[in-house]
Image 1: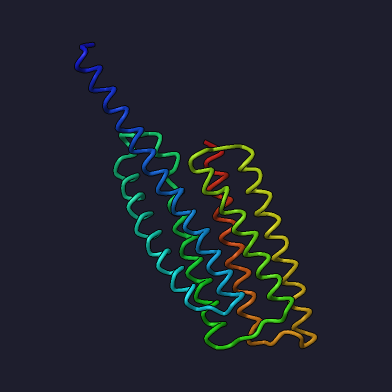
Image 2 (image 1 turned 90 degrees about the vertical axis):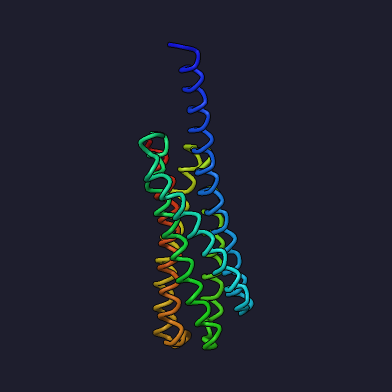
Length: 214
């Protein structure tokens, strides 16, 4: 094999690695932005501050744009870079996280604009679950750049724990509703928020599991 051919292969190999690194950084940053959004939503929920929802929505637009670009690149270049196929389904999960955050933002916006009051217990439960979700998104971003068995285990266990807690909260909520502690207008909103929070945690778990299996 001639020196020119060897040099060409080495240059292409470096290009492939740089391209892969660039795609992974974009996916990692997108999850980090999602984490930032969750903090904004948490504060918007606590302080009834709709301005923070607008900030979150702008961040989600960035996520959608960047993840769509990465998805296109992976689809077009995976035959040249087999390593990219490992991450083929990851952008879809990140996009679903973004869409779920948008839905959660809409629900919080409705709560604020319509002055829908949650019971003190429902507020505490919601804030707790949002915080747990933030704590799941942090290692989910990390696992994009550093696939790690311990991170996967933590995310899986945290997702199960969050899901079980959300189900417990839903049961307690039904009891409050029956006792008249919770208003019916807040009930559907609260249950919908629980469902979205659970879905974001599930999407995060899927990212971790799919990367671990490769």
